[in-house]
Amino acid sequence: MNNKHRAIRLTSIFILLLTLNSCIGISLSIQMNKDGSGKLTMEYRISKMINNLGALDGNESMPSIPVGKTDWERTLNRIPGAKLASYSSVEEKQDTVIKAVIDYKDDKSLLLLLDSYGDKTSINRQGQSGKLELILLKDSVDNSTYDEDLLDLMRVFMDGYNFSINFIGQGNSTLAVTDGASNVITPQSSAKTVLSGKSVSYSIGIMDLLDIKDGLGFRISW
Image 1 (cartoon, rainbow, N blue to C red):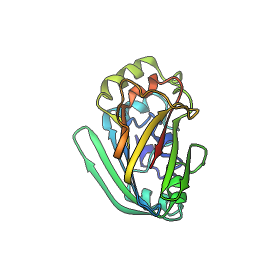
Image 2 (cartoon, rainbow, N blue to C red):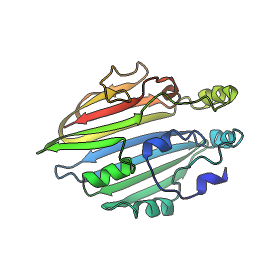
Image 3 (cartoon, rainbow, N blue to C red):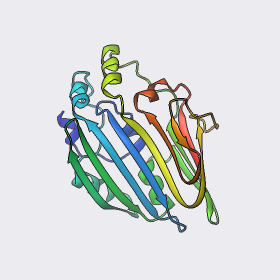
Image 4 (cartoon, rainbow, N blue to C red):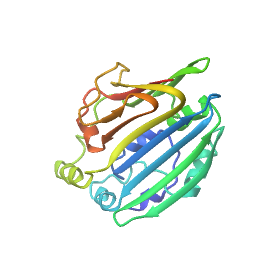
């Protein structure tokens, strides 16, 4: 589908995750230093078969994700304190696997990378401690505009594609799963979590996101 090659502004990693016309698996890792700088690593897999199926569903007008190195560089030029440290793209038999490593200067740069609209993320610091709040979904995913037969096909082909988030700080960190209103909830039974340690993480199947009814977010403390 031609529209995946368009360069667009990276409005929000999480919004892009839900543009099902590309149907991706995505891994997001945040490494934070004591001074607030760090690295953001984003790796995503684009299923060639599902990407082609998306064209049949009339979703060409939906936004696509940065694919080429030039796309990423153009996007990051708009974000003060962020620069592309490395980029790779590998064509596998079924997927295109893209990995971008971004250096960010401070909290402001990180927040712009995660959510340029500023209504889904926040960071509060107290000395060397802090708290990062992220909202992935404010409410349930609206899949009413998608044909049920297409969704059934997607569930088959997207088996094994996951969304995951990982945070690595300088000391012990904790991760709490929240709903779309930032209320702490029990992690979904289908999710795999590490809730305490130097590295905390959450992983769930892409299609399992469709079954979440009250939104999804994360509260990471260090």
